[in-house]
Image 1 (cartoon, rainbow, N blue to C red):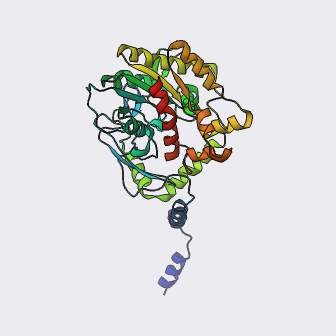
Image 2 (spheres, one colour):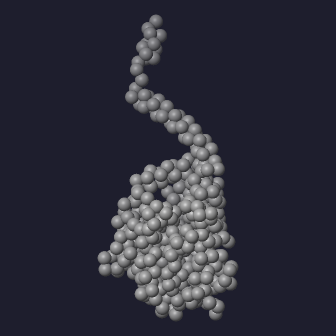
Image 3 (cartoon, rainbow, N blue to C red):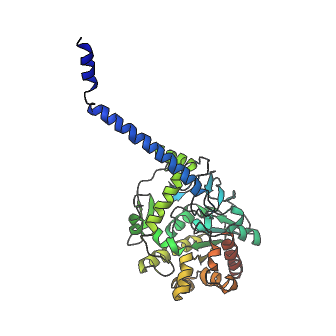
Length: 379
C-alpha cells in the first residue's frame, strides 16, 4: 500500500537544474525563432518598398566578394571571368569581368589604334550603373576610341591606381592615361590612420610610408573572400532581407558619427602630398610608355553642398595649378557640372546621383562625358 505514495512523492520533487536549463533554453529558442521570422517578414516589406535606400536580396548566390583583396601588388580587385548581381534600393545591375579581372569587355594586349587607359575607383568602374551608360562606355561610343576601364570599388585609392597601372594596365598598348580622382574618399583610401579608425586596418592593402616608400598591411591571401564564413555570408546576403536591413542600420550608426565631409575642402597637407606623389608615379610610368597623362576631379553631393553654402572649392584651383607646373592637364568637374543644373536650382545637382546611393546616375555619367569629351580632344 506504500507504492502510490512513493510515486506521488517523486512527482512532487522539484525539477533538477538540468531540466530547468533545458526548459529555459527551449523557451529562448522558440521566442528567438518567432522574433527572427517576424523580423524577416518586416524586413521583406521594408526592402521591397519603393523608397528603400539600400541593398536588397538578389535571390542569387554570387561567389562571395566580387571585390576581394586578391592582387599582390594593389590589393582589391575582381576575379577573372566573374559575374555578380548587385541589387540596391533603386537599381539591379549585373557585373561581368574579363579574363584579367576588369569590369570591361575583353581587350587585346596589342593594338595599332590609339587607346586610352582609364583608372579610378567605383565611379570609374560604374558601381550600380549598367555598363552601357557609364562614363567610359559613353566616351568610347562617342569618340570611336577604345577606353580600357581599370576602375574598381572596394576602397581603392590613387596609390593603388599607380600600382595597378604599373603592373597590369601598362601592358596594354595605349597612348593616353586618364585618371578620375574622387576627393571624397581617395584621400581616406591612402590614410592608414583613417582605415584603422573604421575597423579596416588589417586588410591587405598598400600605403605610403613617411618617405613615400610603399608598405603593406595585413596578410596576402589569394583566396580572400572564399572561406566558409564568406560563403555563409553570401547565402545570407542573397536570401535574407533582414541581413540588408542590418547592414543599412549599421551604416547609419557609423556615418552619423562623422561630420559632413567634403574631400574638395577638408583635406590635409599630407592628404594632398600623397595624392600628388601617386599621380606623379603614374606620370612616370606613362612617360616610359610614351603615353600622355590627364586627370579629372569628381565631386560628390557634399562637395556641391559646400560650394553652395560657403562658395568654396579649395582643391580644384590647387590641382590645376599643380598640374600646369608638372605638365599634367587637370579638369575639375565641380564648377562645370554645377553650372549645368537646370532652372537655376540649388539642389538639382542631386539628379547627378542615384536616389538610393551616392554614385552617379545615368545623368551624372552623361553630363561628365559631355564636359570631358571636348577637353580630352583639345588636350
